[in-house]
Image 1 (tube, rainbow, N blue to C red):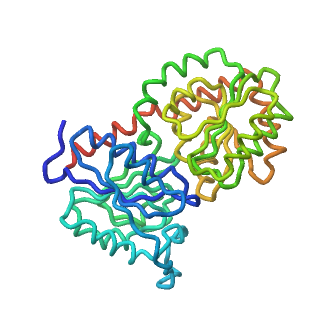
Image 2 (image 1 turned 90 degrees about the horizontal axis):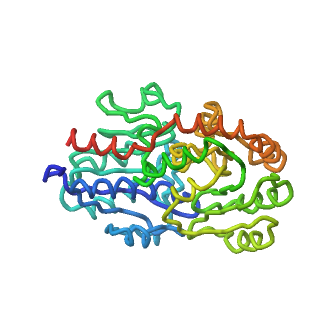
Length: 370
């Protein structure tokens, strides 16, 4: 399988930072790896925010053109029309677009943009630098000018984008298209087999790549005080730039149950398959858990996770806990999941949401449409 020669060059515009988190970069890396396998040459454009993943992207074998953060953020122009997350960019969209245009000398086959701070204005300004534009979004809260749009959220429908995209834009909506690494497909059957006779022995705590609110520590304290009787092991996964890592490690050493803290893991699917319950944030990792049928207690850590968590809670695939009342609500949720029937029901509902083959679906679209 090969891409047409005119479309071999693909540029991905995305960022990671302490505020943004790591999810956008991680799912773009998944897509980039798949595109490389079908003949594309992928390059990233990323700002050098605190907590960026530029070195990590390069270690995965991809070129990165860094965008400087030395200039002062200028958000004074058209502020009333900016996207809700415009401040994530660190500058106005015009400054970012100018810098990106300078780095793309000749038109490329695709520009893929995954950034809550960018909208149709940035996309329009880069249109002459690519043959096609793809946007990855989760919010449906701003206008886009693109050929393809991916929103992998459960419950997302075409009407959500009716007034903010062109009628010619092709939509890929729902967890069927969630960008998961191939190992999640491999571990799915193994994970589901484990859940036929569920028992709460191993809990995974994963609050995203940054967890700047230190929710992992709060969860560990609750588990130490109200741990289920059958619990034997806890695994905490943190990102490389998690600012509270030392405190989490200290608490792990004080736990009454064996607790391991892992960072920069490369076998998340295997880890999830070995666990009986996940306590974690909403976001892209939700679809990882669902693909493996992993029961979950989910917590809103950011405004942009509310839609995901409400839909996943409604589906029966997870139990929602409010961050403001975490201590009380998590104890109640732990009592519920101590019941094997509850774990079994959560697992069944989660596994029906996605099989983890979204990457393959998107790659088919690239091959068929280019």
